[in-house]
Length: 253
Ligand code: PGA
Image (cartoon, rainbow, N blue to C red; front, side, top):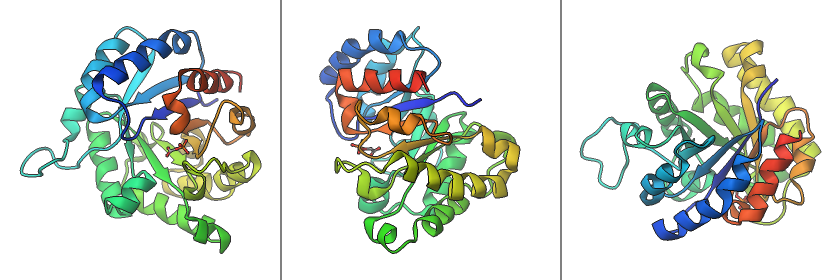
């Protein structure tokens, strides 16, 4: 049995003050939900403040990115040890980072190795564009992203990975995939390629989230699918009631 994991990707939203009040408003509701791993991923400047608020709770903290080098002349970047000071999780290879900041399967791979070396749980994002979807290339794309992004990962550590399947056409568009369609991508392509890399047993242990326009209204449709183990939530994670309801839906799955 895999424990579902629901993570809120706040993207470039919330000042420290705003982050504090959002966490304050949702933490009680989240703490009441059991049987689900709950994770908040605020922007870097808010990590310190949010980590203080989450002390002593069962709510995890994640960063939205990290650099793979330990330290040095990398202006504007954040090293794995700096992330690990506050966080247990880190989102890697989000499609916005791939599209706007030049991330590739190779840099994703370097970041995954760096995160694991610092005992961070990587949430590795994969997903196809609308063009790739329409031309029937979803399987090919996600298989490539997984096999290159996770290349060389120690199979003994792989069970702790989290993969987020996020079709790009569903992110921030209000046009979520259907539960069935998303589950088929996980079952037909993602878990099989994980099995090729790490063996069947480990592939069965790896949590795979769905992401892309998940809301309180559609969460159950995803969580009732056998291969979907939670969600990576963007827009709806900024709304207290929505995010708590999504986490609650996962606890019932
Ligand atoms: P969305 O974003 O829920 O706003 O579609 C999901 C994501 O980008 O992780």
